[in-house]
Length: 140
Image (cartoon, rainbow, N blue to C red):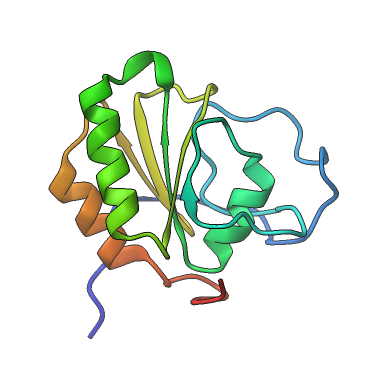
């Protein structure tokens, strides 16, 4: 029996491939699936924002995307997030996201966790529980 997914369920539009720029303006909450670009984003720690459409494609492949609003997180919080991303390197994308309306938002396909501050164990549990529970799990 599988453990229930963590986070809040997110209603998704059909997961179709769209051209770069076809998604429109970035929403204030990190997207958790739906239409996406043709090329997935590689796992890793990014110090600059990444295209939503490429990261969404990676979610379809079972990755977890940890985003943060750079103006709202401390160096200590970023260090914790870096540690989580490093520990789950194959399965996690970590990037700043300027549009975020909350300091930290963690997403997997169809699930979203919005946080005002980092709860390291909760983020680790989210990654462990939600990774590879997507339409195309395990593709890297």
